[in-house]
Image 1 (cartoon, rainbow, N blue to C red):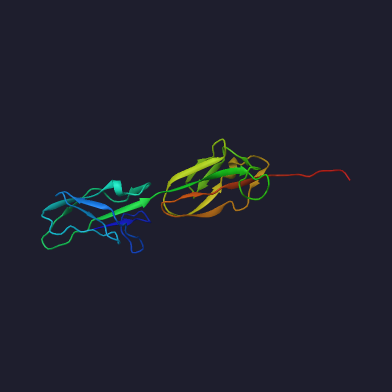
Image 2: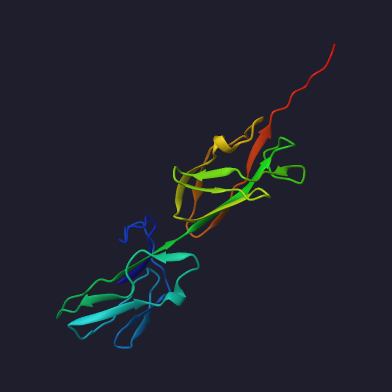
Length: 193
């Protein structure tokens, strides 16, 4: 069998999905083994007609979810090899600050003012509101590329989206990614000549 990073979350080991090394796997007869560098494991000479294979959850990376059943029962047939795949999806977290870009540099700094109650959208369906100090957080995402934006309906009158919003964001597996998003207040200069 194998333990693999299920990058697309489909529960099937694809050629581009790497194996995970050093994960303990147990068999219901009491034997335990570790996955090798390619994420593979084997239990030779299993007596049947059925065996139950379990991935030890203590070895699962933080934030990972199984995309396959655990434990798995398999039929044991004479002179045949049963394949038991265990897929892991490592969730991604996206967070940041929405702020009034007072100094117009596009980066959150002491001169800028955090903005609460702004709706952040990740793709078309996932979203979160910024808290009173402008922070937002969206967790439970899978690795991939997402369109990130501030929902215009929540932007206060007199403000516009800052540079780079909306933007495409690459979220690598198992990472926390921070993306701060500037809003800009309209400014007017008046005078008499």
